[in-house]
Amino acid sequence: MRGITFGTYDTAAQQWTLASWSLSPAVYKANLVQVPASDLVLDLSTALTDGEARYSPRTLTVTLETSVGDRLTRKGRIDQAINQLSGKSVNIILPDDNAHYLIGRLNLQEVYNTPAHASILITATCDPWMYSTDETVYTLTAAAEQQEATLSNDGRRSVVPTVTVADGSVHIGYGASSWDLSEGTYQIPELYITPGDHTVTYSGTGTITIRYREAVLS
Image 1 (cartoon, rainbow, N blue to C red):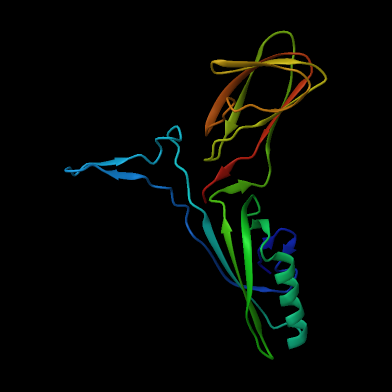
Image 2 (tube, rainbow, N blue to C red):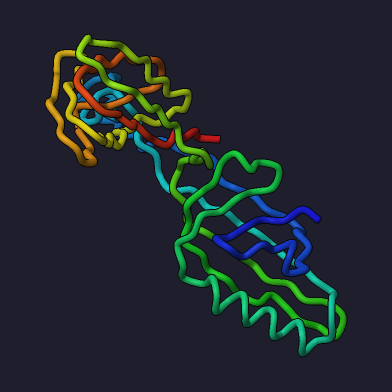
């Protein structure tokens, strides 16, 4: 049975039928400025974001139905779903796409519960991004001689990875910047991985683990 997973709540496992669902498209935040006494319009949508568009939240709407059990039993399941999920921010896995998830805050309401049938409506205000279920992870072994590694971001969203140094200390270079890192975990704003392939250099001792989560818009 096809369903949607809200955090740990699997609608199919809870014997709900997925009657319908829809997700509004990702819409970029436009900043258009009319120039007085002119037909010219200035598009400043990415003026403060290094050329990258920013997006408004998306809305997920889900209708669930069931005829399993009697009216009192269904009422109990409706109440359980509302108490477990309403108001919570959770990861949401949509049908037919286990490779990505949304992050959204939920609202649930009972639509009806007749002697034969029941329905609930779930709406979620979601981040614009569809996040990869699996993180992208690179594990590098440093040596005295400088080496290179290619970091690939196959998503659409730029990311700042987490860098963990273990069993030594390293020198890492990226573009015009470089850092000397001892053992520990770091997030370095200048290590900004835009979509595409990027080269980092590294040397020293120990291991370097670089991890980040890719995301797409649909």
